[in-house]
Structures are given as C-alpha cells and as structure tokens.
Amino acid sequence: MTSSFWDREVETLARPALERLQLRRLQAVVRRVARQVPFYQQQFAERGLKPAQLRSLEDVRRLPFTTGADLRTTYPKGLVALPANRLARLHTSSGTTGKPKALFFSRRDVDNAAELIARCLVMTGVTPDDILQNMMTYGLFTGALVMHYGAEKVGCLVIPAGPGNTEKQLLLMQDFRSTALHITPSYALYLASYLEGKGLDPRRDLAIRKAFIGAEPYTEETRRKIEQALGVDVYNSYGLSEMNGPGIAFECEQQHGMHLWEDNYILEIVDPQTGAPRPDGQQGELVLTTLCREAMPLLRYRTRDITAVIPGPCPCGRTHRRLSRITGRTDDMLIVRGVNIYPQQIEQVLMSLPQVGSNYQIILDGLDDMTIKVELAKSAFDGQMEHLVQLQTEIINRLRAEILTKPKVELVPPGTLPISEGKAKRVLDHRSL
Amino acid sequence: MSNVKILAVFAENKLGQLARITRILADANIDIRWMTIATSDTFGVCKCLVDQCERAFQELQQHGLTVSLLEVLAVEVEDRPGGMYAVADCLAKHQVNVENSSGFTFNRRAGLLIETKDLDRGRLALEKNRFHLLTAEELLSR
Picture 1: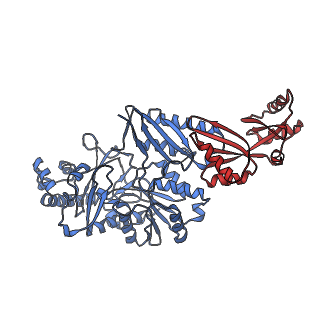
Picture 2 (picture 1 turned 90 degrees about the vertical axis):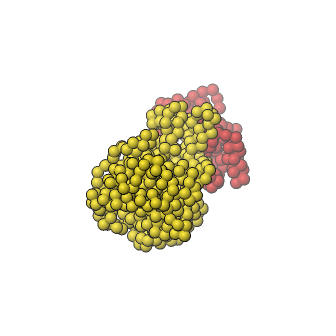
C-alpha cells in the first residue's frame, strides 16, 4: 500500500537529519525560555544550568521536568514567552479540581497545530473530497478546534457538530453524507448502539468510512468493536491540551502505533517514579518537550500517560517513531485491596466479549469494594436467565484473571448507565478511606 | 402450526421495575394471561404470555426495555393423577431437555408451557403420542 503524505520531506526525513533538526530547535527554545520565562530562569539557576551546555540531544535530560502542578502554580500566564499582544488564542485543560491549566497559542502556533493535523489526516488517506463531522467539544477544550483548522487546511468540508444530540448528528450524517468522524471512544460506542436501536446499518445507510478517535484512552478491543459496529476504519489519535491538543501522535494507514511528530516534539519515556530514561520498547511515562511553540514552550512536560515507543521502522516510510496505545494515565491508576489496576484492563476484558454492550461503570465504595456495572448488548438477550448468569460468571472469572482481585459484576439492560457525550466518567470512587 | 410465543424482559432487580413493565402493557391495553419472574442478586427476567404478543413487544421496546420473544411448546395436560408424568415421560424418552416449564389453567383446562432448545423434536414427540398441543388462539380465547 502506498502512503499519502502532507509534508513528505519532513515526514520521511532520515533520522540523523531529523535529530540534527531537533537539537538545533531544542537549543533555540532553551535559549528563549532562559531569556523570557522567569519560571525557567529560576529552575536553570537552581541547577546552575546554562543554555550553552546543551550540546547533544541526550543533554535534554539535564533540563528540569515541567509538571501539571507547575502549570497550576504559574496560572494564568506564568509560562508565557511572548508579549500579551502576540497571543492569539486561549485554551484550558479540564481540571477536575481547582484551577484549570491555561494554554496560550500565538498565530503561528495555531497554524502549526493545524499543519500537524493535516499530516495526520492525510496519512490515513483523507483527501479534500472528505466530509468530516467533528463531534468533539468546541470551546475551551482543544479537541474540536485544533482538528477543525487542520481538516480545513487539508481541504475537507468540516461540519462543526460538537458532541451530543445524537438525533441531529444522525441527520447531519444522512443529509450531508459525512465520510469521517472525529469522536471520543465512549461516544462512538454510544452512537453504535443508537444506530442499532434505530435499525440502521451504517455500511448501507451512511457514508462514514473513517473515525478519528482520541481524548480518552481506549483499548484495541474497543477499536475493533467500533470498527465492526460503525463500519469504519478507526485511527487512534493522541494528544493533550498542554501540547496543543490532538494530532501530536496519530496512526497511519498501518493502524499500528501512532507516529509522534518528532520535528515538533522531543519524546522521552521515563520511569514514572524516578524519572530515569527507559529504552524503546519499554513502557513508561511519556515526557514531551515542545520544539516549535512560540507562546508557551514547555520543557520535559510530564504527560502522566503510560506508553512505549514501538521499536523499528514503520512500513509507511515515516521516520518519526511510533507510540503504542496509551495503556493508562498515572493519575487513573486505582489501588483496590492493595492491587494496582488501570481501568483500561477492565475495559479490555469487557470489550472482548460480544455479549457486552457499549457502556460500563466502575464503582468503588465501602472500605475497598469494587462493583462493575456492565450493559448487556441488545442482541445478546435471548430471554434466558441462565445465559445471563453464565455471562456474569464468565465476566467475573476473566476479570479476576486480569486484575487479580474478584470484583462484583452487575449486568444491566442497555441504556441504563449514564451516557457520556464528552469525556466519559467511567470510575466513581466513593470509598471512605 | 406455529408455536406459542411469550415475552421475556430483562430488568434490574430493583424497586419499581415490575411496575414499569406492567404499566407500559396496561397503557397499551394489553392483557397479561400468565407471568413468571426469575431473579438473581442484581437482575431478573420477567416472562409473560399476553393477548397481543407482537404489539406488546413493540411497545416495550419503544419504551427502551430489552425484550426478547421466545417460542415455547404449550401442551394440554390431563387433570388426573399421572397426567403430568405422561408428558414428562414422553419428553424424556425422546431426549427432549426441558429448560423451563410452568403450569397454568385456562377455560377450566390445564396446560404446561415448555421452554426447550429442541422445539421441533418435542413437538413431534408429543404429537406422535397423541398429546394435544395448544395454539395461541386456544390459549387466549375466553
């Protein structure tokens, strides 16, 4: 299969040239923050660090980490490196508690983020003939707007649908023949069960062929479920608002790992506890340094996302390394009865069972009890109580094998659990610990 | 001859679920002739025989319930000692495994609803041994 490119030269740049470009850009960004950003000036002073000491890419490890907490303590504008009148856009990152993180873009940053999205879309085969229905949240959240600008750059017709109002979404898909969706995994699953309920077959009744899915971690099993139910190819999208939003890493037509745009970011995988580097192929926390951002350069930002670099070149010809699917956020890890559990482990088990529907919820309460509410797939109910009990037992056994603790499992009818049209709230922690 | 159909509804085992189901049927003016409920700790299945099966199925589904239609055998049982044994013996001899069964009366006659995976074999066995298989019309007539 031949791949399509938006910017073939940069996307296939030989590694030595790519790394020289990275070093040159890293040196420039470090010099700039040392001049413009008091937060980094102080960090450098504490370490006795001078920009001139950065002589190789490995020297990036001498730089201090930046954390989400740093973004909060410097809120609102402590990390901005441009004069106020050069700022073009503000986004915030959803904080569940307290202040959000404020992220600023210059005009060039806005355009550059769109440029990266254009690379992402074109490598999945998107052309100006495509009609993208953008079902992410518009507004302070980066997800929808950054994708919007990128898809316009490619020349697509963009439908700024936003999330929710599924009936209207369907109308748009039918009337304007949308070919691609940008959507969260939980909403995609909900859409699938909604279409099933309406008796619609997307392959026959709709024109959708691709879905770009991100904003929440999801599993390979969920990807297959969505591909099957919606009749689309799903491309995994990785991003975080602190780094621009979506499009930082994206799958090519191989659908095997997400190319991270290394001319724009320096990528490291580190031990989440010690911060020590981990080699390609090993899981760890993703740490990113922005190389091209004007308004708000961030050095060694701790993403809290757990992933690994997939070793070796990709058949598509791109030289930018690939990240494996995000397996969890260090923040998401649950500790139940002394066992570390990522919600994705539970999702993986549930979504591998065809009798399981599109929604589930993990509830922690009492002292340390875990209950998982699982929606049955509509088509899986044959009226037999025994089959439900068997399924319940099978889910419990499979979960126990995966997470090493025995949860309570409740089967509930489809449509019972609250649906999410933005970011899903899968875990409710009511423990009185 | 078509088999008798019953409805099976999947519901959470919590307060108000039976009221929710029967309210929908009542509002649609559907008569419930027979009903059974099986529950586990957190969920249950409610099965019923109604006078307008297809319409009841549509109504429940439109109200967001998870419903399934089951085909069952309905056989008349003689109201005498050994009447039930005769049916059970016939099915066992023909290796028809009964998954669920429930007796009921209609028009002063006694009947048995039988859920089995071996519908056709069960029907043949019963017919060959001169049992009277009931049609939906017979069951539902007043």
